[in-house]
Image: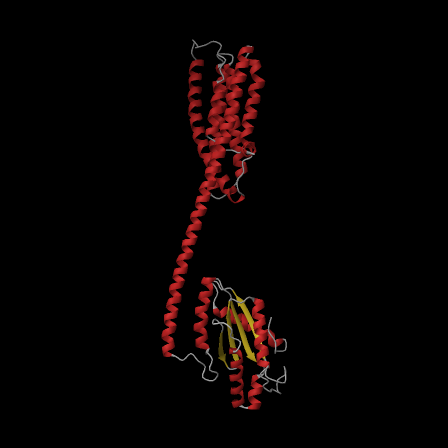
Length: 416
């Protein structure tokens, strides 16, 4: 299991794009430093090579000045092209253009060229002193500069190693030296490839750790923000309560006719309970109640009978209050509002049916009603779990729309 995980590097999907962007930018920066150093070295070697090739007395007559000069020029040209393209790629990433696949291909091509170039130089060196130092140097250097996944990192190793293995018998005739080269290069390739995997895996783990720390810090900040919001909400509630107490001393909160809370009392209660519901994540159920065809009742039976009807209906509504948090108020005219806290939608519908039936049981005669021979009510309901962006007015409007649907459906019923 551990070996399979070592070869199959993976990262959570939520971090993949960010990880790819970070490693690509880092590879471009490191690659440009490497390219600048390589450019300086190759220009120096080319100048030295040119100075010796024009000398009447050479250091060594069997030294292939032309071959090495061509290789130096190839490296200089390739490096200049890489510096230009990598600079363009870096600017595109900074501008938000995420062409990571193309940029990775550019890095792999440049790395493959460097390692293949060093393999060819080591082949040339076989004619002089049988050294593979150039090839081994790149095998050691490349893993410490570039962070690439296994599939991409393997390409330059396979290409350069193939060039060296195929070409070395043509340049080195000593079987002993060939065996020594094979052992040394094989060991360096394995160690270099493993080192590349270890460094890549370590960088990935470090990246994930940093992101997890950032995520937890953000979570902690969110919790602190919520705590601050709750503190502010508590302060607002406290201020609202103090303001409500002051208003209680100045204004009557009871409806003169029915003896139940009036609209002002309802507003104070609803604002307080609304904020409490937000804090404690409770639901708020509103039941908008209207006496069916009350104008006809009032016109035909007289205002005194109408007032008596309102009083008896209000008492019936109050009789359905079963908990301290239940609240009923007269909105005005023949409209009432019943408020219940922390009841689900099914419970709210049952409560509405009970209220409707309790009014019917009053048996107040109403021969002018088109809904029934006695006084009935229509009920609109709204059930919400308030958030900071919601207001009591939104809930009242929803309950009013439900009441409207009940009236359209024939009255004496609970709206949808």
